[in-house]
Amino acid sequence: MRRNLGLALALIAAAAIAAGLAGCAAGKGTTNNNYYITDDDASPGDDDNDDDASPADDDNDDDATPGDDDDNDNDNDNDNDDIDDDSADSWSAMTSGTPWDLHGVWGSSATDVFAVGSNVLHYDGASWATTVSQPPAELFGLWGSSGSDVFAVGFNGSILHYDGASWTPMTSGTTALLYAVWGASGANVFAAGTQYDAGGNPLAGVIVNYDGAVWSPMKTEPTAEFVGVWGDSAADVFAVGGSIMRYNGSTWSTMTSEPTAGLYSVWGSSAADVFAVGAGGYILNYRGGSSWTAMTSGTSALLYGVWGGGPTDVFAVGTTFGAGGSPAGDVILFYNGSAWSPMTSGSTAGLYGLWGSSATDVFAVGEAGTILHYGP
Image 1 (cartoon, rainbow, N blue to C red):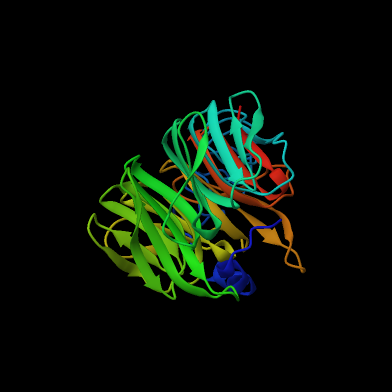
Image 2 (image 1 turned 120 degrees about the horizontal axis):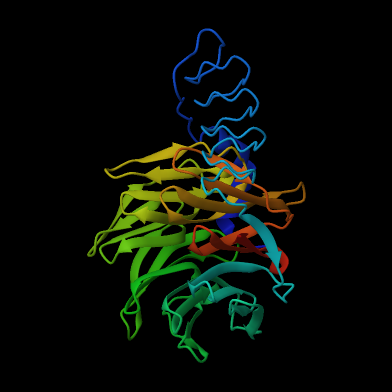
C-alpha cells in the first residue's frame, strides 16, 4: 500500500506549480563571444558549458573525457552519474523478502541496517531478513544511537525500541501519526508527527521527546503538520512539514510559516547547511541566518527523503504519480555542491526514504518492498 499522508493528498495537485517556484540556478563562467557558449575554453566544436577544451565530449563538466555524458561531475570516468567519484558506482535492486511498502531506513554501519514499514527488516551485509512481521502499527521513521539502541515510530503514536536483541513497544503519550525520529543521543530523542481528525485533516503538529526514561510532549503547533525532523546537536534541531521550526535547546520557534510546498524530510551536513525536500520537487537550503533558499531540482515529483554523506554528496528520493494517484515511478536526485541532477536506478517503484553509511554506500526504500543500493 502507498504511503498515505494527509499533507501529500492536499499538495499533489499543486506539484507542478511548486516545481516552478523552486528557485533558479546560477550561471557559470563568462560568455565566449566567438562561439556563443558560456564556458571559458577556446574550443569551437564542443558546444558545452564547461572549461575543458575537448571538442568531443559535449557535456557540461570540466573533465576532458569524450563520451562520458555526465554533465555535472569533473571526473574522468564513463559512469554517466554526475558524481565526482572516478568510479562506476550505480544503483541496483536488493531482495527485501517483503511485498509491503517500506518507509524508513537507518543503520549503524554498512553491515547493520534496518528498514521499516508494515514490518521490520534487518540487513547484515549479506542479505535482508524480516525481524518483526507484524508490528503494532505501520512504521515510518527510524533512527538509532547505535545498533543496539534503535527507535522506530509510526501510526497512533507507536514507538518501538530495539535493544540489540528484541523490539519492545514504548509509551509515547500521543496518538499522533509519528513520521520521523532523530536523536542527539539515546537519552535525547525527538519524534515528530501530526494529529489528524477522522477526515484526515491536520489538527496539530506534534513533537515528543525521550529523555532516556520516558517520552513527554514537547511541542504542539495548532493546525500545523510535522513530517520530518533532524538536528545538528541537542541545541539545534529542525522540524519540517507545513512550516519549518527550529529548536535552540530550550524553545521551538518558527523559521518559515508557509513554505511554497509541503516539506517531508530534512537533513544537513551541519547546522549551517541544511536541506529540506517536499511536494512538487521543492528543495530548500539553509546556509545560516534567518532565511531558506529555494533550489532548482529539475523535477515536479513528490520528494519524500533527503540524506547526504557530506555537503557535496547529497541524495533525494521520491516518486511520480499517475492519473489515478498511484506511484508511477521513482525519482533519485544527486547534489554535488553546485547543482541537483537526476540519477538512474532501473526501478519503477516509488521511493520513500534513504540513508547511507557513506556517499558510496546508500540504501533507498519504498513501494512494495523496494530496496535499492548505491555503491560499487
